[in-house]
Image (cartoon, rainbow, N blue to C red; front, side):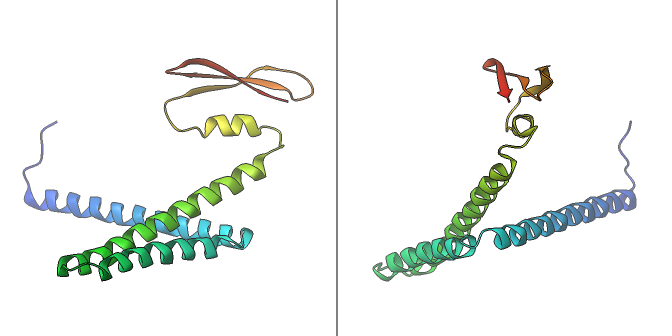
Length: 153
């Protein structure tokens, strides 16, 4: 298939791709905000931990900038503190949300298969290789290390 040399078609395709990226980005932000709202209602310590981490890191960065002689350091360290503080606060949110999700799944039928399906990396999961009538199951996971059997019961 030959490329189009029509400038109007190329421009329209670029505009369409840009609009699709913006829509996907907006959807991701909305999903993160919704997850944050749900987690904040469940976990009362989430917001204080996030704020404390942000303020602590920003305070350390500003404190280091105060003892500096350079104007460049006066400008860059607080900016770096804001960025690192936001990153650490976001990491705290992610870890606490993950802990909450796994604690909800704990003890429920099918939780082991769900956890195996949500593993990061290149794993091939075959659920329910062997099972009993009392919902005990064995799941097979294939990956780079080899074959792993996960049990649930």
